[in-house]
Length: 454
Image 1 (spheres, one colour):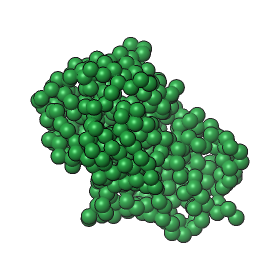
Image 2 (cartoon, one colour; image 1 turned 135 degrees about the horizontal axis):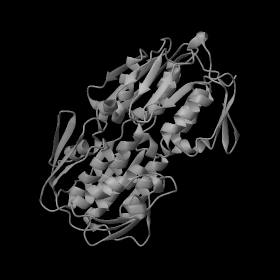
Image 3 (cartoon, one colour; image 1 turned 180 degrees about the vertical axis):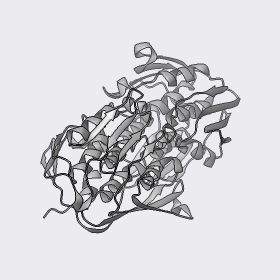
């Protein structure tokens, strides 16, 4: 594996047999939330093992603009703040760059800061991602927000005001919408906010609030999560250690499962939230050899953690995935679709319309990619994805065709294509590979450890 130019990387299929341990990547979702909550707390917080991915840096930079003092040292962030109530109207625009999590979570927080005014923007990709549902929900509790294209897109302007907690129900399985509302409740009028949404979304924000002593509780009924938050609330300084990211681990797991040589890889200290491990459920259903071991004492991390081991050798089988599991695999659909291209039979992933409004139209992109490498993928009218098992595993193989690929700035497409490149007939080229830094800056360095230079 070598960088052919500053703008591309070449990958040649030549995997190293044996047992490997991968470091993985600090969890991006939990880092976003830890940074925001620490900036909102009064005092000095310490966040260990935080992700320094580009998305998380967008959140860190925004928190600095709002008034938090942040010092980044090796594997440690020290955040000192007078509390969110002391945030000032910034003289500059808040730029969220490419981070949808930064945008949605902070919009919820800023809407509740009465008497302050904020203008928020993002890059070209973020500026076409949907914001209307979030804005509508926040307006239901009194927010004053204006946005471009009939309240659909960034940039937007927020005139902070005191919000009124009430009952809110929505049918989009979105942890970002839920988290924005929970943050909006921090400075709302006294009362209770009730949030009713489909179950299956990651629960990091509510778990972290409860750990900080906030009156936030929830239950699941008839496939819906029902949350109750007592407003307003304040936060003490935090001391948190961020676990590793299951979504980043999925790429290495897929590579091992599809390896033509005997391989085993272990990834340690992954966030063990069941709603983040849906891809493991899917792989087990495909008869892939994956094993989870949960740590009893959390090893000092902010959430329960687990170790994940994957072994090569099993022939994968096709799966039929219903819409209910999509929130649990939303970040892993593309690498799971690649696995399906190597499975026996026809796999179906139902109702993937949410993939159309990510960093790119990922639904179309993964179908085009699979077809271009010699597989067969079809998108149905209801945004379901059909993938026909085409390729073989191990020495039975019909390998994917070699390719040159431009992920158009989408980090998950770049990583999916890179895993595929190590399973093809010969050398492949990925253009603009630096986009993986959005979520996993060390991706290629860690991939190198599984790949022979000989």
